Length: 368
Length: 255
Image (cartoon, rainbow over all chains, first blue to last red; front, side):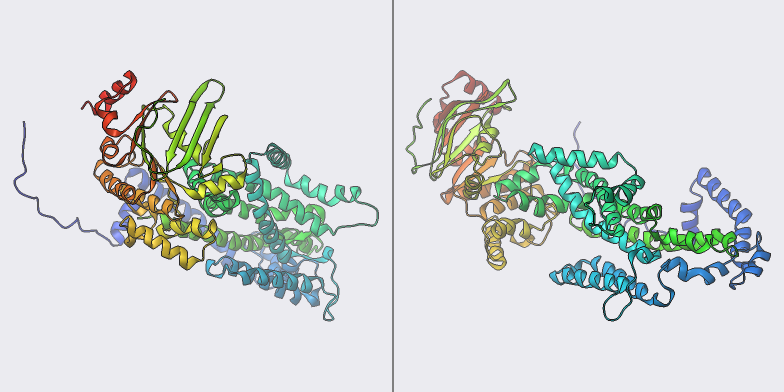
């Protein structure tokens, strides 16, 4: 049987798209009976528990730094007074009270630098100069000893400045190391490959706590007498090495996803190994693993809280420091933890949104 | 081996001397390959799948290593020396079945990459050269697009332009039309025919027998890692000598 279409079917307009609140509710909340049930359950739970939470957090909360009032409201209302009373101790740890403007300025500079570094338009040679300048300013302000600033030794550094400095520096140092290790693990040279595999497997085989312990307590035992490295630097190296091993495996995942033809094409054009990696392989490999890399960065940021184990009081550690020693305020640790939770969340959420933005930028070449 | 019957267009530019290659311990993929390619000569290599034809041309720019024999390209002997390999790669352009364009770079960036980083050419000069090559393959208006925004035929033409940007003396094509939709094969073949007309030395692994008849100086038939027969296209198609060639031709021309 054969047929021939003797006229062209005229073009029609596509179906009109409906919009509006009712449609949104129907498609998103009550699409079928399962979705409707889930919506109703969620609403019921909110009705059941939200008022109590609002009562505790807002209505009955005590915002004055008044220990007596807080004590009276215990159980029915939150004591935000603890935050008002102790926030400087929580945020800056044991740093001398009257000099706390120094870590404040230093941290603002560092955060500003990190924000600038996140923007691609600023990836120019001067950014490297800016990094050197800001890091010098950071450590100059924190440590002192110049421009008449009193020396504050690293054992008194603490709180949020320490958290931000440790995590940003270990991320910045770990990332290039991770790329090299990932490339090394795929190298044709057996010696390089073996070293990289041993490094990755050794580090992944131990918890971060023990790496920090070794950096802090065991490492000095092997140093020649009289030669000491500041505990902060040892811990920074420890976190960097730890993070780099995990990052290297994420990067390797990206490297393995690059089709062999890409490398053959680069080879056939006469590009050298390093040119091929830099121009062809890494841009594509890293773009593929942005979510994994950012996941790791966020985890490094939070893992810095473990340095409390070796007596460095970053944000979490300084919260304990601030409240444990004060019998009046010790009972209100939950409020204190909620406070630093908000701080952690702000930074982590910012990182995760940045990751999404980067993915969007990188996907431009894949969209038609 | 039958000597090439047609007179060489020029002196030999690529010479294979008893080249042998094995994959692993038991797969002898290239067997005693002796081959001399003359300057300006256009050669089509055909043969059944797995006969070693792609491997043969991939040995020339060291995408594959071989275990025995010698290959010389424009007087440079192919050794493990990285410098020699890089020099040969500058003289030999290659076009792949799967295009292998760099998807994260624009068409123009794909073309300027090697001139800028291998030939150390200033950006403006590299871009000028890239645009000339894009015009040559009639796709200049797509310079700012990304490869995946182009059709298969357009991508393959960009790949040809990319290989031409280093002004190679030899162009190698590894089944350049096998991954294309039928209606796009012609636009790529047209570019290749034009290139042949301009005197480029070409080595093409292809099953496009129309192309072979139109432009080849010599057709080489390979089977099981061996050069079984080579001849002018006319002789090769009209009067094949070996049984294996006849069998192969009957399969690809039989319908």
